Image (cartoon, rainbow, N blue to C red):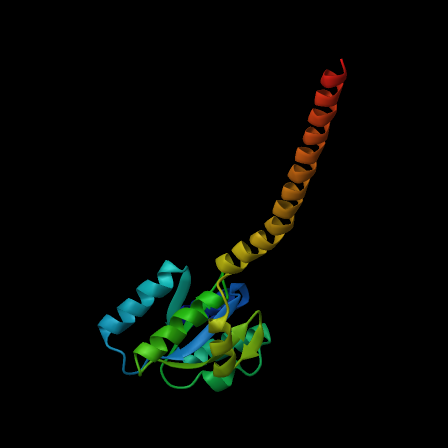
Amino acid sequence: MGITREKKEKIVSEIKTDLSRAKAAIVTDYRGLNVEQITSLRRALRAEKVKYMVVKNTLAKRAAQELGITGLDAYLEGPTAIAYGFEDPVAPAKILTKFAKEFEFLKLKGGLLEGALMDTAMIKTLADLPSREVLLAKLAGAFAAPMTGFAGAAQALLRKFVATLDAVREKKAAEA
């Protein structure tokens, strides 16, 4: 006995919600991974707040179609699981690329980045980008650098001013 129509509609609705909320959604073929490897992958993804869900291709295709997403169907063949990155679009790409190198059976098929289709080459490029936290830290550093320079310059001017005042005070004291 298959799953009921209501259950299918609920699954399609969940996939639609996940696809529309995700900054990145990466479609994988997990065929050949053992339970220990999948558990390890899920744990690594969960640690980065990435949802990894096995999907039925026909239901995922229907969800994509209802959202007006074209081209994703090409990746929805064979055993399929989708990794949804809701906060950091780089995190699922980094983790999945790392695991694909470690476990030969994990295959990256393609996916979506901010609603745009991406192939495996784009996923690997995305994986090479620094994480959101690293980018924010670099941005904060870039903003802080001019401020640090300004503070140093202001401090140097203040030192010169104080030294000048001190010299004037000493000269006045010597004249008196």
